[in-house]
Length: 186
Image 1 (cartoon, one colour):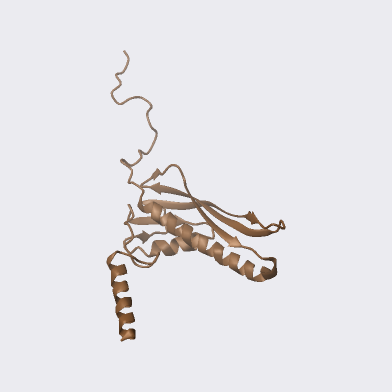
Image 2: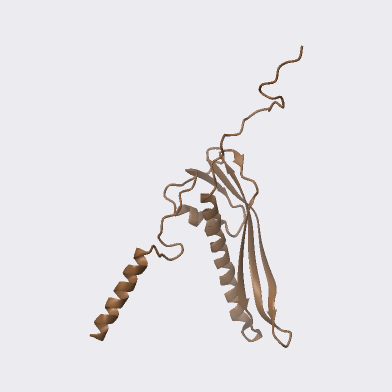
């Protein structure tokens, strides 16, 4: 009897969570459609490039192209930076906690129009530190950096989904500085 009540409770909880739209981050849940159908992604030598490609590949409506001239959008990672700062010290003056900060700067061009300003994604994580477990903390730090890059990739694609299409495509060729309705002088 007690076991069946536990199963009933668990089933009720699962139904309630699924009815409210709950889903784990990155798993399920519809992705907001991107304002473009084709994309050229230039990750360069950035460590986050593989993670961004993985997130972009999840969208079946998006076509990743190899030629930037054929793409409706061009996304380039301009820079990335990792910083490790001391967050807290203990009473003895030894490091107790670090703050790891990952920053990526991304430039986007939609339909030939650069989106200004460049997108800056900042991900911060804190990491406890102990002198007695240096090797383990190095491995933990590597895992935290990898998680920060995955989170940054998710943020980049999420922000791309909220970009607005430009009102008009840019004019090509030399531009006239004269107003359209200007009358020639005699």
